[in-house]
Amino acid sequence: MIAKKVLLVGNFGVGKTSLIRRFVLNEFSEDYISTIGVRVSKKVVEYQNETIKLMIWDVAGTSGNEKIPKAYFLGAHGAMFVFDLSREETFLTIDKNLQMVKDLSGIENITIVGNKKDLLTDEEVQNVVKKVSVDIDLITSAKEGDNVEDAFMQLTAQTLK
Image 1 (cartoon, rainbow, N blue to C red):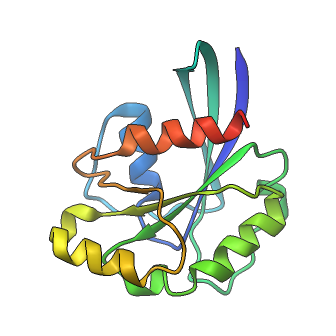
Image 2 (image 1 turned 90 degrees about the horizontal axis):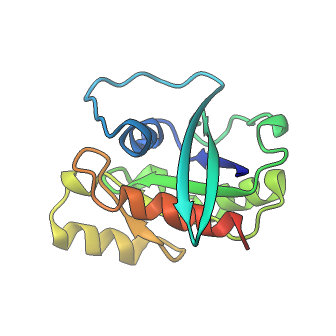
């Protein structure tokens, strides 16, 4: 079995913890509990005939200005940047935030996920996609479970490159 450390990063309240709960436990809660520091979850997945233990580091969200301790990023094999499709402030500075994650982690290919699609119409989602300055890998809903498994499988694939 291969162990891989992966990071979920992004602003506070974008749904990182909810995505992890949906993926690891297949649960969703409307209750918002802010992550303080970092929380680590584990899930064993099968990918391309490999058994991989994902060590999923749920890094506390920021409002953009706070510095995240570099120690959280050390030894990471992959990263997912999550933003909230319904909150413009979570994706307006996405370029700067992605660069910070790349600088801290050394990871070049970061999976980009727009979460909370259940709060928007399809047309609104398309308008957001046009506004975001980077290519979005997946549009998810932790609440409804849409594309959550796919997002983590893409993240898993990133760790093996």
